[in-house]
Image (cartoon, rainbow, N blue to C red):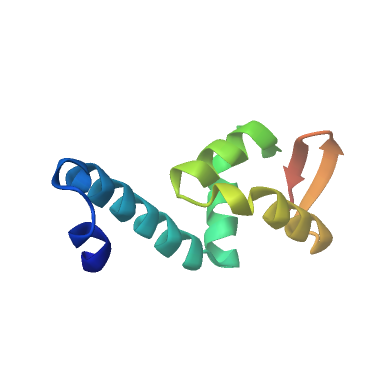
Length: 95
């Protein structure tokens, strides 16, 4: 990263450094996703009736930096019997 910044014009270095740090943190958060974190996010996304909506789950995954993992995780959770599809974009949490 230092080489990239050193080869960047001085007037662009600060902006590039910020972008690189943001990208690095996103990569780190994506690498640290695991099913346990996914289940925790599902629990945080439940409404008062134990229902999950796609929009709420996506919002909470995005907050944690895992926006690219949402659909794949929901499909896995459904296949594993952790959630039950009620309608398009709605699931019942079964745990």
